[in-house]
Length: 351
Image (cartoon, rainbow, N blue to C red; front, side):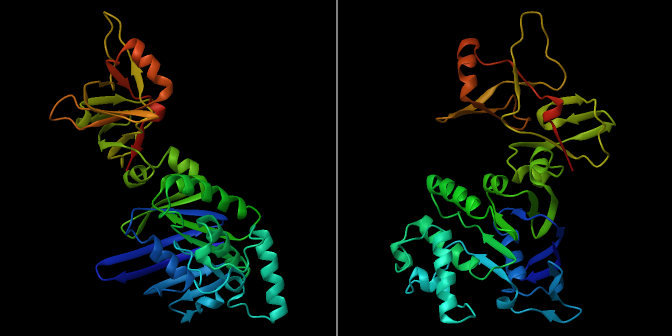
């Protein structure tokens, strides 16, 4: 269990983080500069909050009121940095042994165990610069695990990699951590990384927690405008609640009548770009309420999807419709649809 209730001011930036979780795989999602790395630094003891409290597995690591601030090396926390932070002039074996507080023979035993566990056999005498990116990641994780930490912090460990290598190393890291019983916290601005890795999601914006909950449920129903945007929703616009079942959406020039009840604090609606349902009307048929007229303003044809940007008039906001390959043949045979339907179960009601 981890409990964080801290605040810190740095210049004009204010961090206010309050979260409590029993999950073992936590993701923190947010744009660059929102306070993700500062939060990790406070947990690790690299940075000190101005006030608040941090509790890990029942141990108080920081409490301003009680004047508790445990030194970083005593917090039982492993920190995997973006560049892995291996000592460049030390071999893999010596990197793993560095800082272990035990006798030389026991250090050697621990290093041997970690080298085998993280598939570094035959690489123990090599320098970090002689390793591939994946090998460096495994060496850095081996060094962390040698300390038997209670928590591992992953600070955007894949952001500098190309897409192919990133995908492979993400899967490797997930597999290497499968039998790790402690808590792992990953911070990232990549929604795909977070979705793939975490069971529980914290969404941050401008130093604050926007929402916090099960990862899949948060992606399905983000509830908040910023959470929807950060989880990849391309179409978000203001909405006016008329009553419990009706919404006006001026930016798209449409109105919704919904079966579900609309809460009074709903201020926006969203629809993910893949979730539209194309509608071809026969002669004599008429569009229904809540349908968006298809008038293509521009198109981007990519290898695996076509992106259509729709705009019926200057007064209306752009709408993004992303069409994946399985629908391409249908569009070629039937032509562009006249309308896009927004199924009620796909409509995001946002605060």
